[in-house]
Each structure stands twice: as structure tokens, then as C-alpha cells.
Length: 274
Image 1: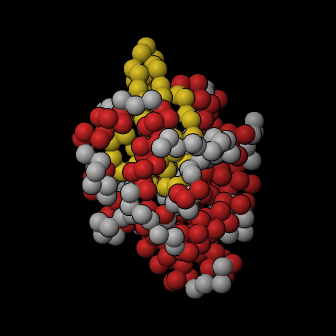
Image 2: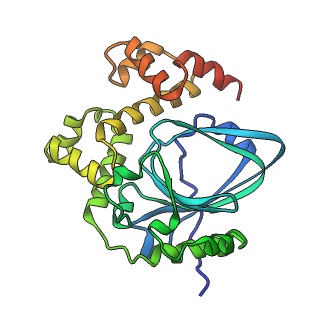
Image 3: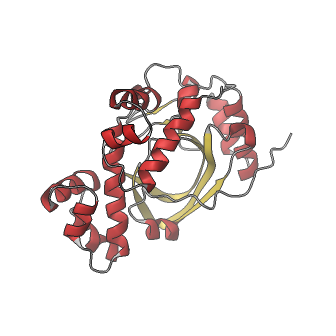
């Protein structure tokens, strides 16, 4: 049976891209919403395609939310956990990657290989979670047309028969609140907003994401800062720092450089060259 995909995930906002304009110039990125039965677990299926025979492009990204991606390509296939630092993906020559992005926390329903923290900062074989996804499977899917390749990933995910989990929904509600409510900048404020103890909320994130809530809060603040810097001709450095909860501009500058690889002023100069 051919899977009929819903509309493209047009509202997808890649907040983690530090060079969104450059990415759009060099890389074709297509998303498709999942079928209804997988919507509790999959944010979208995706295809990245590039054609850069003379002008290789390095796409710098920050993994702004604790995603897990399953992906298949001619060069490599696997399950990618959250990388805490800034990464560069090189688009060189021609290529295509087909993937499925799991909602934050949803891979908990699939991962049987130990603590989810064990998946961070690494890419593991597909077969570690999906036994049927061997080398022959990767070769077959890599040779399919786009729609057929995404259909194959749908069936791969379905093969695990994931069970609904209220904690997955709670994790996503918390993350959505953090990204939209400027008042949620500490573990204490998040716990209070959701009527939980700080210890309970932190354990929820460790169990379902393998990443601490404090890390997510800091990353959200810095990505918000990056967007403000990109969108302003003359950024108010002190205002940005204090609005995001920093006690001083120096502390903000230090955190920003540690994650982004540039100071805020260096990042602004870099964005001008997009």
C-alpha cells in the first residue's frame, strides 16, 4: 500500500540554524507531516538534497531541541542523538538524505539500548533499534524515489509498534512553553508552571531525553539571542543580555561564545556576510 502523506510541514521553524539564508541558497529541504498513527512520535519526515559540485557548503547548526533523527543515505545511515555543541554539515558534490525526526522524548518508546543519555553525541547503527534495517535495506531505500523512500521509513518506524505515553506529550508541552514564555528561564519556574517538583521535572528530562533541563533552558536563551542579533541592524547588547536573564553582559558574551563559537559581535559581523 502506498502511503499518502499529509501536507508539507510548512510551519517548521529551524531555529537551530545559525546561517538560515545560506542554507536556503545551497540546500533543498523538504518536510512531510507523519501519518496520523505516528503523529505522537514523529515531528516530520524529511529530505535534504544538495547539488554543489563547484561550491561546497558547510551548514553550521546548533541542535536547538533534543531531537533524535533516523536517516538513510548512500554515504551513511543511522540514528543520530542530540549533539550538544555546534556542528558543521558539509554539502559537497551531489547527494540526498532521507530521514525521520522524532518529537522530543518520543524515542524513549523505541530505545531499548540503555539510558537515552547513551545516545547523545553519537550516531549508532539503524539495526541497533530496527533489526531489519541492514546494509541491504539501506541500499534499497537509498535507490528509491523520494515518496517511496519516505514510505519505507514510515513502515520501519511502525514495525516497532510504539505505545502512546503521556510523558512524551508532557515533555513537548514543557518545551513549547519554554520556547514561547520569556518567564520560564529557570528549572524552578518551569516546575512551578507545571505543578511539579524541580527534582521530578529534571528526572523526566533525564529519562525521556537524556539531556538536562538546564541545558535546554540555556540553549533556548542563546538561540533566542542569535535570532535577535540576526534580525537587528544595531543590536542592544545589554538589553538582550538582561532580557534573557543574564546578570551581566560579560556572562552573556561568555555563554554565547562557548556555544556558538563566536562572541555576539563576531556573530553579527558573520551574519552580515550571509
